[in-house]
Length: 69
Image (tube, rainbow, N blue to C red; front, side, top):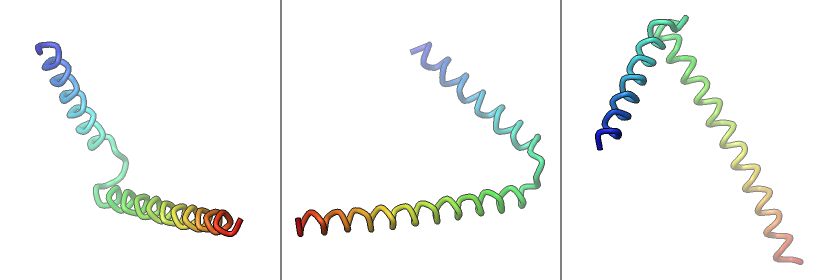
């Protein structure tokens, strides 16, 4: 139990230090950073949607071939 507590305390401390350093050393303002994250997230979601549609189309084609074959 003591080892687990030490590990969790160390992990939490490391995460906190990392977050603070990331905020202090980031070259962009908060607004710019949020806009960049939003843009990247939207792009990733759009790519995911396209991949899902393409996979769905491919699977439907394969299903139709299996039904008729």
